[in-house]
Image 1 (cartoon, helix red, strand yellow):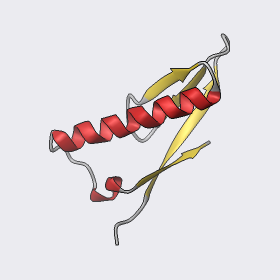
Image 2 (cartoon, rainbow, N blue to C red):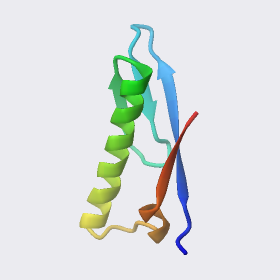
Image 3 (cartoon, rainbow, N blue to C red):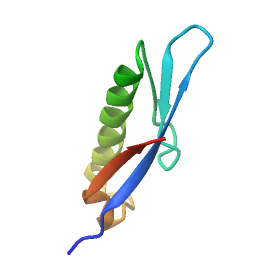
Image 4 (cartoon, helix red, strand yellow):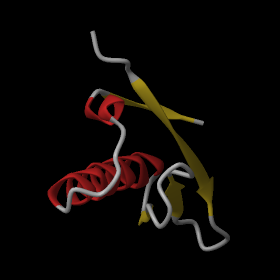
Amino acid sequence: MAKMTQLKIELEQEADGRWIGEVPALPGVMAYGQTKAAALAAVQALALRAMADRLDHQEAVPDDLLNVSFIAA
């Protein structure tokens, strides 16, 4: 059975009221949203796209990244 990888999402509200979400384990995966929920959805989608891009380009991606869950911090 494949190991489940959990990616931590850090959420923070900016001074202008927007929310930013970041996945520290995936460099460059950061997205804004007008609400906390919007930022969370955007950063999850971006993280999945980043992992898919790495798989498409046969970059070193651990097999366990194929089973991913997100944890909002």
